Length: 209
Image (cartoon, rainbow, N blue to C red; front, side, top):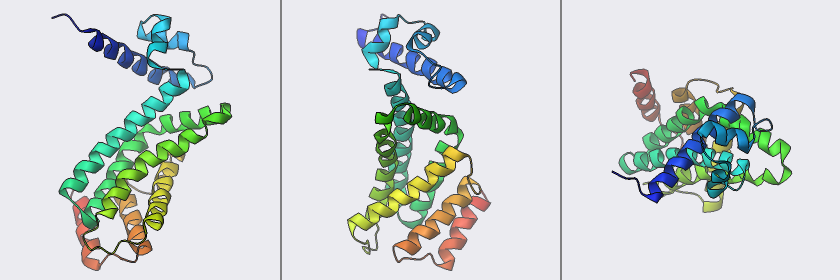
């Protein structure tokens, strides 16, 4: 069957993303050119600009795609498993997803170092991770949620810590255990400390996983 123009465009876009991702990880942002990306993708040079304004936007799309995968996982977790267990599972998935992608976060830092006007990109991408955590916590069945502004600040701090661990390669423990530590911190911060039964249940989940 013949492919539609929309399908051909999407195939070209994916080819450019894959070529850009591999090149950028190999040689870095400064040493990667649009010409190199299109050559590796086996696409005409002008095709790049049908999909991306510049190579910075390609980097942004790569990071946003990773964030969207995390958001989809978080939505599914919170739909099935609310409460303490849902929070821990969301954080665990967050660490499991972003930790292997350290090169992408280092790439973002290189972009920001080279292009001053790129700094807001970090904040915007961080918010993509904050939003699903915040939404799940706002659905707390106890109804003892603090003011929205405080809750959002705490979610931002939680995610910022996670992104720092991913970027620096200093995850203090396994994703399971790091998520447990941050779940404890979070629940203490909102005045709902975990019970011994909560801790035993969560430890049991990853000790046998």
